[in-house]
Image (cartoon, rainbow, N blue to C red):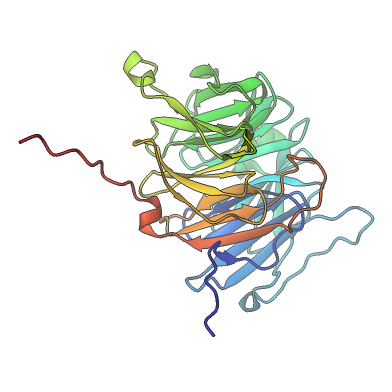
Length: 367
């Protein structure tokens, strides 16, 4: 008997047990880095058959024995472990052999996968919500609930006084960051959006307010560097542009998504994640309704909707050539404490028809 197709994608073994906060593919390979609220970071190697090697970076309560564990990679099991002092809220790659993490324990860490070594770049005064590595400047950029943005030089990891490049006050708690080239977009509580040029961080290049009425959940820059997409807790996405001219601002718009009608009323879900396709610049959104939608932003159309995932979609990432999409299915407690499906990570193969913009069809001229 033929097995039923896995419409949601291949499920990854040994997923985090609590609250997947982010996942990211490497820019250089199909390695996948995963952070979660169970104080865990997963580092996975994805080969064409989706056999997985795993490095598992974890922290336990002080009352529990802390250990470093190594498992057989060919058996797709735990291969290593790093310790954190709290839930991990974000992660990013440096290169294929190292990455960075942002944690509730206020610390910013560099993690060296091959040697099981970690360096603490420094600390914020409150939990670190998001982290990015800039290939343009060689700096790590972190945003915190202490209402600051910090830039770090990872080469000076032996002490905060050597690694901290600068601290930049934000109007509110930082919720999301995104980079494209030398441009950095910072989204905070209170619907503030600051746009920086990394070559001159003395003040924001632009100070904006979100065009969406409700709390920002995610911001992601367009791959071509002309603007950014921003999502909110109220089932909407705004498409914004950096060009402040009248012509530039005339291109911006917002649209509704991740909502449904039931018994005559609209049910609206937060849009947790945005991921741009690296080839076609179309983008996927993931929401608390458990769906992933793919959009053509230029033509203002939905291209595809994947079958529903078991729980809220908390994070998304395309791999470097866009042939794989990683999906974190993880309850985000938008409805408070309640029974929910176990956290899962799915990696699905992406068909071109799902992500390639469709050409506009023009009517034939009258004869």
